[in-house]
View 1 (cartoon, rainbow, N blue to C red):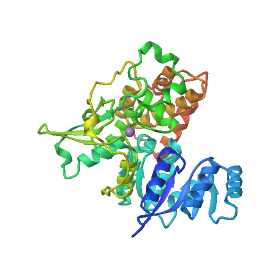
View 2 (cartoon, rainbow, N blue to C red; view 1 turned 90 degrees about the vertical axis):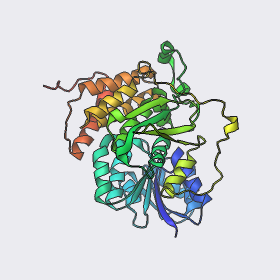
View 3 (cartoon, helix red, strand yellow; view 1 turned 45 degrees about the vertical axis):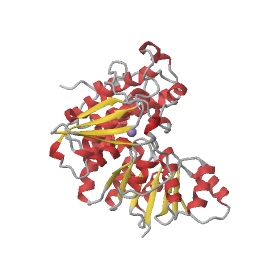
View 4 (tube, helix red, strand yellow; view 1 turned 60 degrees about the horizontal axis):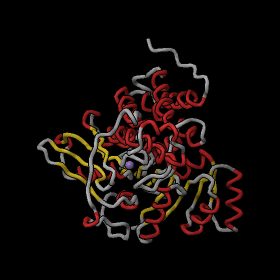
Length: 390
Ligand code: MN3
């Protein structure tokens, strides 16, 4: 039977590769809904090729332009938040692929879970900002979560047939990003263009910058904490610049399981789309005879302070991960627009965390408020801090 899927973020890197997989297995998937932003030609092309029932775009202007390109091709077009909700909750879909970077995917994802959809999750920010609510909703609605991120996919694969009480630690591998071997004093001069050149993975701008600051790995640590229910003390990061081992699990008896493969996101995306089952494919393969060495190093926390900021936000819990995530998102946007320097990203994140008055047991609404506050804090030149915690 065909699986009906909806994709939030169809024109991004993960969205495009998801559609590539849907096209490669036409008897397995129906694409019933797409949400995208403003890439008019690509959106129109995807509609013509996949024939979704409904599609959401950024605004009326983009919608009109897409309609023009479609020249009579039938599809229901929607816009904005309402459109995202319609895509996330479309009755015919059983699986929603969440691949819009940033906090914008949080509410539609929660709506998808409430509508009893299984979730294939690529957007890290959802779990980071609202991990407890997300996992509680998943349990409450008895839906499944399939991680798309290569590290979490790797860990999920290593844990098949294992007892979670027997885990000693998770080892998340990090490529180290484009500035791994750069002298620390040169970091300040790095531009968005330098940061967007990722050595091993081909990704969108937000995640590429996060990868350069190592915040990407920090977000993944928090995600792993929620997905696998493990204390932060049991989650370790190791720089492995070849991106061949996608992550590992060490068990209490000293045995370690690793998942390896080519650095091709279509492999974990396909695995998630098929509900963690394996099918033969034509994606990249790992040829061990061409692998000269596998190296492992501790991350340089002084050069890349974002990783520690993420651990600290995760350990503080409450509203702090949402604040850290929002401050980072806002700072990355400023950096991409050339408004702040590379090392300012970590500084902005730290400042926001220090100024934030933590709420230990937040409501969902509190998380949204904390997120907004952190964004404004970073975007305002004259930061007026929240009153210090007493
Ligand atoms: Mn990853």
